[in-house]
Length: 95
Image 1 (spheres, rainbow, N blue to C red):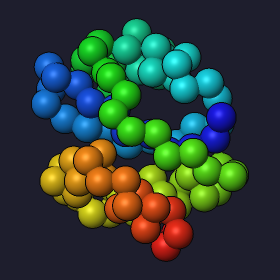
Image 2: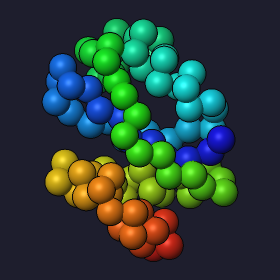
Image 3: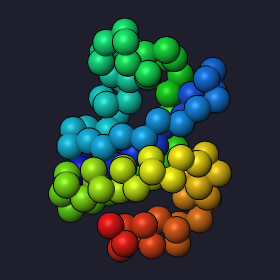
Image 4: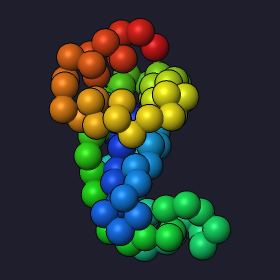
């Protein structure tokens, strides 16, 4: 399943935004067990939980959505995306 995802760690009180082409469950498991290396941001916590998944037709679109969300540099924007599905629809159509 291809798309952009947002996960959250309660320990860190932070969000992480990523894009994937692989199975989402295994992707989150890899973040939680540090499979991406000890120097990676997600390796500092082991309690990542999926908050939002935006399915896309292709990986390039998932990357555009990921970059747009990261460019906002706002946890409030992320929280609004999670709460209001019309914002997600607007984001998908504008990227």
